[in-house]
Length: 234
Image 1 (cartoon, rainbow, N blue to C red):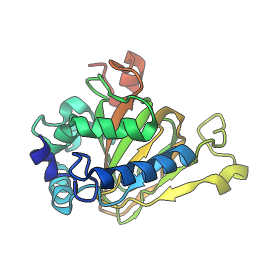
Image 2: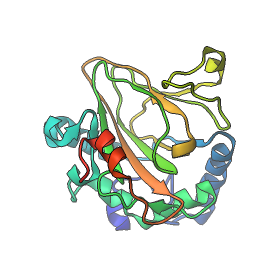
Image 3: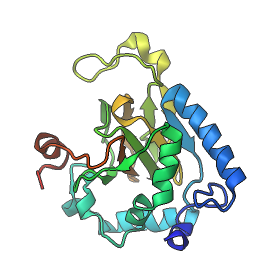
Image 4: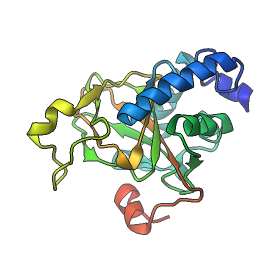
């Protein structure tokens, strides 16, 4: 499995396979510090450029086209089992890495639809302020739009979001912005992290992958959430 993932992740820069224990310790300590302060940590160039190109081609060639998604989301069961994304999600060193960063055991979601999703935001799409349903979310940036499509978030502890999903103007100064940079990994504190995607503009969509991890094993979404996110229960 490591050989397969080696073609996806830059394991020299981020040696999750422990090929360089000293380097891995440095990455963990730095990323842990960022996560503890803000609930977010960012790892640039986590994915190899060739892997990003292959993932983007798979999505934009209609491999995960309109028929496969609900609104802008492709559910886990619609992603081919042969996808390198599934190989990465089920790679044990990634789960162990997430556990180190968040300071507790992290477990992959057991949900058949929401364990891992691909989100494709096209021209005019926007994702309003929200929390994720998982305790922790690993996001991989695959395709950057022509304009917009940035990830805005409020570092923890953050301001309250008002009823209706809006952000009080008095708290706008707290908002941080992450541009969509292909190859980047972003880890954030899912259900405690207030975040949104700004409006996407242009002919090139924003493509990202979201991997759900929880503090307890076997966690699944309920039927109501599945209908809301995927338009179906199974």
